[in-house]
Image 1 (spheres, helix red, strand yellow):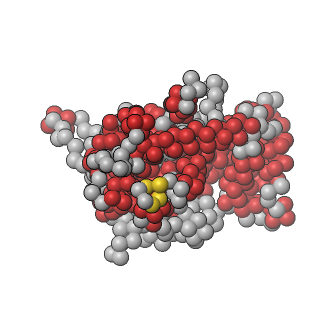
Image 2: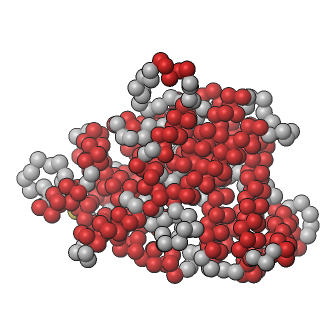
Image 3: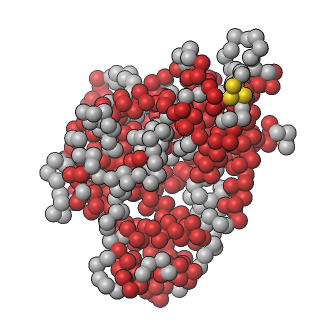
Length: 475
């Protein structure tokens, strides 16, 4: 892989030619992407989507929007660090043009990385997948069931619904005139898992195969983007874009630090609780033996103890420590990228950027702390129950409505209730379906089901809750 291709500004559809006068004051392609992203409806919707904690009236809890901005900021800073580093691992092929392009691509990709996530955070994601796993063999379609008519990959796409695949689907719709049309370099960076739903395996040693990264419907778009940026090899295997590793690390750093800070601000644990949990998750014997992950993790918690001694405000000490630890995690991942540069550029690097570093244990402990203190909280449990009730209701009714959406009539046709639900579907989603249907019965049914997922996953928490209450007669 080479940076000249990896930073391709090519797009899935050509844009209108700009007036010649604009060339006097040029703006690079990725700055234009940034402007298009922040001006788009799909990005603005993230302000009303759950990150970890249910949306409430307090102004300090992160939403999916503020999380995306933080990931974007961290990713951009890491791009600057890798482009301008003065270590022994500095690479000559990262020149002035790459030093401008790399941070800009990461800035845009960070803003977009959660675009496909449905309402109610990862609980919503799991609810959609679980609903299809349960209903695929129950929902009748003519003389069969959904499981009986759809091809295996179509079934797996729905049963393993993932926000990463949905993000690619949203961006791939630029081919049909959707509102957001960004550069191939940005789209490729967002493809964390260039693996289909039949091939992924969470236990695979190669990180790019841990989740399904695209739907069968977007296979063509994936290949097009891969060819534009040069991530497809001579045997048609698609590699991860090198910047994907940094985007993934930035997401992990934001989650492990900012969301932990939110949990502390909500009073879900004290500093004492946290220190006790932290120290119980690494080996004290190993930590005293010098240069090992446990040793460096121990040093970080010692820093927190010292900060607590010098300030009267526990929250201030914890906030300062979070900022300090975030910087160390950024340094660690940039170091790993630099040291593993050749393997990454050759598509041979199988791990995340924390693997084999002095803070590989630190990130694990921080993630474990969020699971321990946040995910068993009352607010989170209520969110899970709400997500299940609301999304199951919407899926049941909209899926039933689209089964025979464009059938000519006869025995199999939408009921009067189905037609009312279909009328609720926004015109752009119906247009997308009509632009892609092929006449193949199984494929078109699959696309209609994706149309429902497109609509429901695009909803904000508030809109999904309100629509559920209205359609179920609660209000």
